[in-house]
Length: 282
Image (cartoon, rainbow, N blue to C red; front, side, top):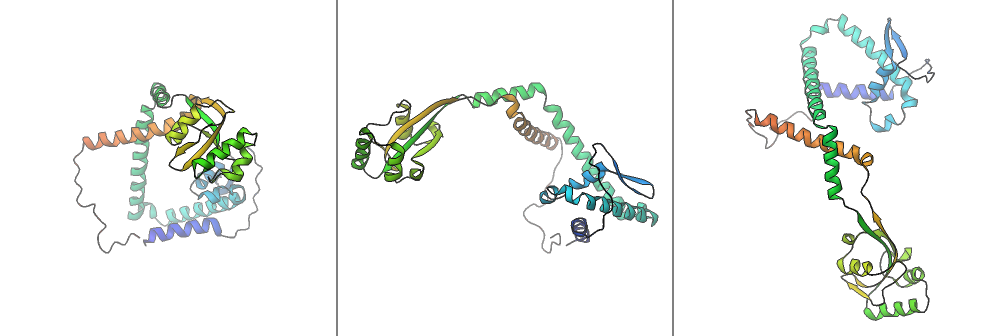
């Protein structure tokens, strides 16, 4: 493991686990408040929140509790930075390499952000939404119960009991071998493609409140089906699906941008089969 990764892990542990006596208080006021000063240099609320963004989710959920600790750690970081500058590290080769690395990362990220956002226009979003509507037309959903048994004779016995006035849900609990039996055979709402064809076709022929007068055979056995309700679902509105459409367009735009960059470059992959023997990056 590299020294850099060891130090990074130590910083995270120090950030989370160090016991500190914290005397500063928060008033909870909005705005970019000054939360500390180090030799006259200000640390603001936005600095704390920037540090918090890099924390694991379990710690972000405890931000109120660890906020004072983050302030104290930023004080330590300010002091370490000042000490490093005083030691002449601004011109150190390792520092310059990391600055160059950070600059390269920032440049590529901003480049991609700008190029991707330029392609997600209002017109492009609306066109994407029209594609979504075309691929998600209104759908008919049935809500049904069923009683599954192992033979046609058993299914006809169930139908006879229903004809005599038996309650469908109670009969399903008593007789159905299917997993929905404990719920009175309730299958909830479903579209035709979510059930085997024989079942969907039989359900589509029933009006709400009706049950099949003849058993329906599928690969699972023999069914008696009762339709409880039927409804038509409409596709989601633009506002509801806009975030997902933006994410899809961003992925598509990034892939297109990378392809365009590759098409204009000379690329030589020397070896991508496996890491060299003796790799020490782990």
